[in-house]
Length: 324
Image 1: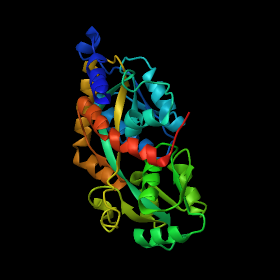
Image 2 (image 1 turned 90 degrees about the horizontal axis):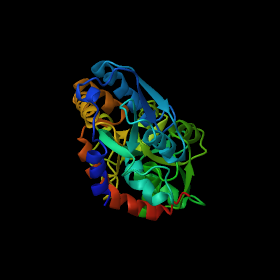
Image 3 (image 1 turned 90 degrees about the vertical axis):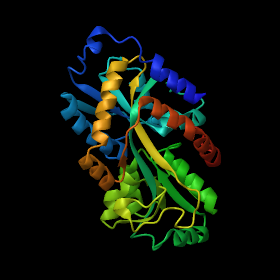
Image 4 (image 1 turned 180 degrees about the horizontal axis):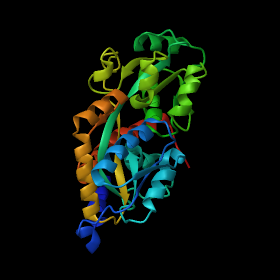
């Protein structure tokens, strides 16, 4: 059902371009990119990578606007309600397209009717991390043993209730038999200092947010949730290699426009996304940041969201999360 609706939005929601769009006038002024998370987190950093290159390719300024809150729904709603003229777009995660419908009794936007996918931009694994100053665990197995022996269990942080790091953490705790208490933050910029101070035990969060503190040695990476070892952290095992099989969980994001944005605008933007994602320098930059630059068609983005819905529905059930 979700796949059918999103694909319909990709087609019907992009109809009826004006003459100026058909003649290729877009863009002829500044473009606003709404990021539904605070500054400093992985999404914010990676969007700014794209904005820098898109400015050069499309010849117009891209202004990044952070509109955080409500699990990203505030920023997504602002994108959905913007004028469909091609000058406001947003970045959406798998959460906004296939998870939040199971978490919220009511959303301020309809992901099928109010948004048009423009293409996936990147994929990134989560990473299991602990503070090196406050936890002696050298491996994931050692951490699990420590956590099981800890009176009252452990605390784990995330950028908010229902985010992929929250659901990944809940799924991990359930899978290995750890008593875990979720502590939500507004973003990694708040989670990281709390971990470094020793007031939070663990996170299974987006690798891109934690790469700097891992490289500095202030946090220890115990495992990544990708199917293979991460190229710039090849000493860190995958979850399967660390003893937790069938735990491949990646968090991908893509750009979106408001519904009824003319198809020629989306097509031109999608072509620019492909060019950025295929640049060797950009691929290397993303890998060093903890993500993988990728590309898809608008329809491919809708199809992937639909395909992953059952897994995330189960993760929501296991977590017991519900947001009203």
